[in-house]
Image (cartoon, rainbow, N blue to C red; front, side, top):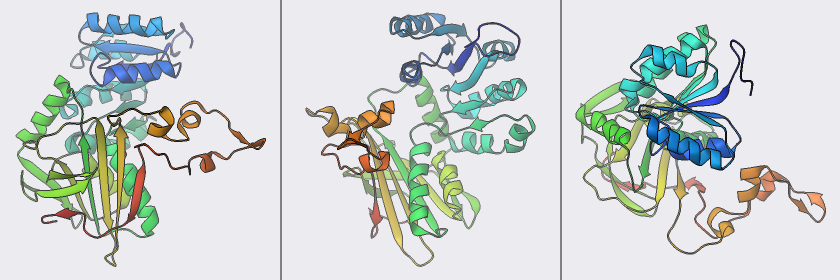
Length: 341
């Protein structure tokens, strides 16, 4: 990275909310990939602690205090970075000023939003992004990104635009940041269940369409919710009827795995389902048992030879792990839940 000169990149990534529960592991991953990171947030102390921890591992990081409601501080923080990655929610309220600053600076923007209004709002700025020759990406966290990949695979397998798509996510994490709590509170405070029917947005009282879905080895009480998965599933499938479920907030959670589920129903009534699991399962495992044969090759780009010949990466991935790797499981299915659709 260059360190001087107008318009030159001095840090690969500006990470907003770097000291938060989402920001810290993202910062570590970026640093592990040898990217220089500008750590940004409201409180300088935790950012400096994180910068020292990363520096001890040989990473390059600097710290900026940023208030996303202050256009001047945002502009200053964005200057000289290659991309802005925001983990600051609720995105419905916090994303707009950051996107504005990125468009003005011509710097790509990525967020991990999972509120339907925030995801839809960013996508509605397509014309602006093209006019500024800038890339905007939303829903890059667990939930929208994971369910979207399932839907894309299922639609490809079906070979037709489905009539109905349903998706769901259950992130079982031990800790939730203030941003996550505020995001959930904002979504629930709207008191609205949002779905697509015949290509139109339909709003109903929150709790309408409650059901129980079976995925990740458990029956899960779910509710249609105003989540980002709704928009990403619609765009991935082209379906006119889409439902995205969120975990019933009154249901008890727990565990160390996170799951997503998708179901597509074709014009002929054919139904395909898929599940994705990520996270650790309690127990004693080797790395290969837990993550499978492609762990090292996927993570590092290492080359494998078999009988002296280079092994195809696709062939490496065909080995079936004995442990609970984050597998994509898809196939024909009858109805996978109880309750109304």
